[in-house]
Image (cartoon, rainbow, N blue to C red; front, side, top):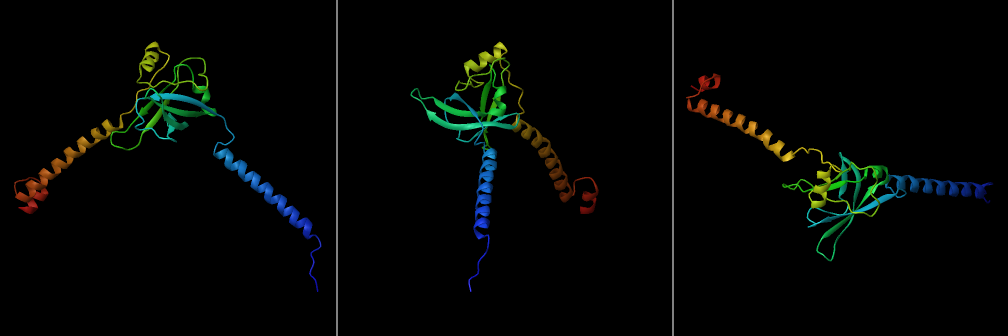
Length: 194
């Protein structure tokens, strides 16, 4: 006896169409999270060395990732050119006088590629060069008031400043322990040891 489902073709067809809809929706959801359908604005910067630069290094503004380095190359004049993008949601901040800065950690805790928006009124066209803050062009923009660099927190100096009092306290504690064990110290521990 043959077993036959009356609407088998319709059920298989409906499930196939439903699977395609789920696949397309998944692609769009994944693509929107990976910025596949968003416009990125490309810019360039010149460096003397590629030290501290890497493809994929995020461009940060106030702690937010607003872009990343796409490509690094060495030109004919032995300058390193970093091609980076700024995401479309942050392009409105790329105004005249915008600067970038690469901070290389002296103890190898990671590098930062920072963006500082300019004080100008017009947007910088896509494909332009954005100068580094430590170049002559960047210093000229700062001197003219078109660009400004906010005061940065020096993490290494803060770390050293916090270590100094800690070392002083440890030294005092060790001196008291040494005095207590030798019997020349003062306090309850010295009296107990005596």
